[in-house]
Image (tube, rainbow, N blue to C red):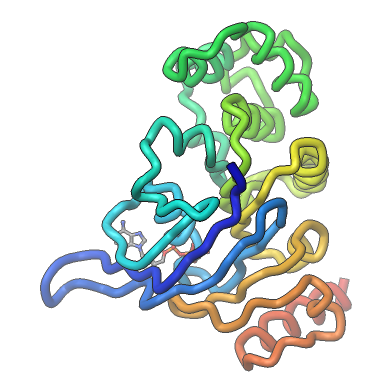
Amino acid sequence: MTSNVEIRNLSISFGEGPAAVKVLPGVNFSVEAGECFGLVGESGSGKSTVLRCISMLTDFWQGQISIGGRNVRDIPRLERCRLLQMVFQDPYGSLHPRQSVRTTLSEPLKIHGLDDHEGRMRRVIRDVGLTADFIDRFPHQMSGGQRQRIAIARALILEPSLLLLDEPTSALDVSVQAEILNLLVRLREERGLTYLMVTHDLAVVDHMCDRFAVMLRGEVTEVLPRAAIQGNHATHPYARELIGASLEYEGAL
Ligand SMILES: Nc1ncnc2c1ncn2[C@@H]1O[C@H](COP(=O)(O)OP(=O)(O)OP(=O)(O)O)[C@@H](O)[C@H]1O
């Protein structure tokens, strides 16, 4: 199944009655199959919420989300898990502290009735740049970067075609960030994956993404190709300001 994502009039409110807050008033954008698409914008603008809606971790939204031309609400949960997976910002929080890597990776294989657990685990561990002995480690026995590699391995074990990446490197030491980004670039090339990635860092977009959307207060102000960063070719004032600030910062380094 192809993994292009279409989002039309996506809206969501948190809270009830007069206290309800509309966080996404109506988001529209599309991600092509095989593309790396970035979501950037100010803190609290709703980027992570968009990913949670697509993955149905949050399901009380209105509008349409389709993946490969199918309404995401019509895709049964087990099938959805094999189509898309999320990688979270914080591998310390996203991996269960008392579960070994073997348990983390083999549980989805059991649930989905897949064979050759050992072979699949070894292949995915190798693909994320670790050695087979990591299969019997626990989170506290790994570095932050190694933990994030395991979180990526967990996302890949069911061989999905779409990864939703929620700031996958921002909790990591600066020296490790580039390693994980390069790993993600390589995995996308090798597996033909589609990425939808939330990031605060336009340098990350410039390194990885084909296009990106700039969000402000729950709305997409502009969708731009990566090439729009250098020379700041955005037209919306907020997008221009964001890119301008990032270029200034890089220039100052
Ligand atoms: N479960 C929730 N209940 C109430 N408000 C929520 C909930 N989840 C998110 N919000 C609010 O929705 C808004 C958007 O949050 P979201 O995490 O999507 O922003 P973001 O753009 O990803 O921010 P950041 O870049 O800081 O991670 C915020 O104001 C947040 O407080």
